[in-house]
Picture 1 (cartoon, helix red, strand yellow):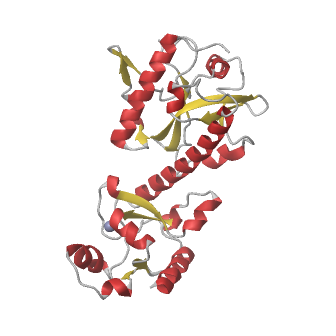
Picture 2 (cartoon, rainbow, N blue to C red; picture 1 turned 90 degrees about the horizontal axis):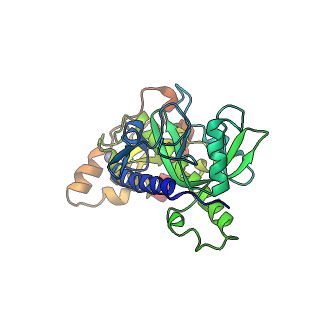
Picture 3 (cartoon, protein in one colour; picture 1 turned 45 degrees about the vertical axis):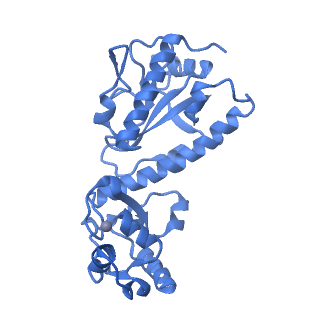
Length: 309
Ligand SMILES: [Zn+2]
């Protein structure tokens, strides 16, 4: 197997490090503006990706690509990750640029497969927002469907790729890809729910995104694979925790209740104001009807709250 050149490898590692720093600072989902800032190597500015092209490499890279990027159809509210679950080996399917495998962009990915070169996958969560996955590898090429199979691996595997038993490598990648899909799903759900609720807690209207979650009304429904906003509520950490543990409940008409055990106690400002203070008030939900909580889900969940209480 040919090995990637030092030049390309240096650019790649600098990109991975810069991306790690971006994610640590801004979270797992990055806006295009952040990605477009690019990264530095030896005082030179490089780009991670290109706004319009899917397959990208900086002009300084000679052999393979640096990144691939999916786009979300214009005007679509939901990323089409379901389409990606088709590959029988669990891989993401990434469409060729055009239909010709010999095209300039596709050849760069073919080369990446031959060299087992790690890439970045900027996965579209919604227009203008991406969840970067790295390192990813082209594990297979499917000519009939014009797509590459893309597998995710652990970042530390890039630094010591020869430590791993060659037989274990496909297993590691398959496992990591499954995990990555789960996290993508969660990230997409959170992103859609927070946006629908205009980045505020449905109970207290607290507005800091860092402390907001996309809470599930019915946890088990999520298994079916759709990130339905109507099964979600944007909640701050405190109210999410209270909801998940059935200390706080929401009537199907949106009125907020507390568990009798909490109502019976007296304590400091967190209990008196941040929890009891909202009893009898109504959840603030999106204006658009199809983004509001599903009545059946609320009813089912409220029954659980009442039983536990
Ligand atoms: Zn809150």
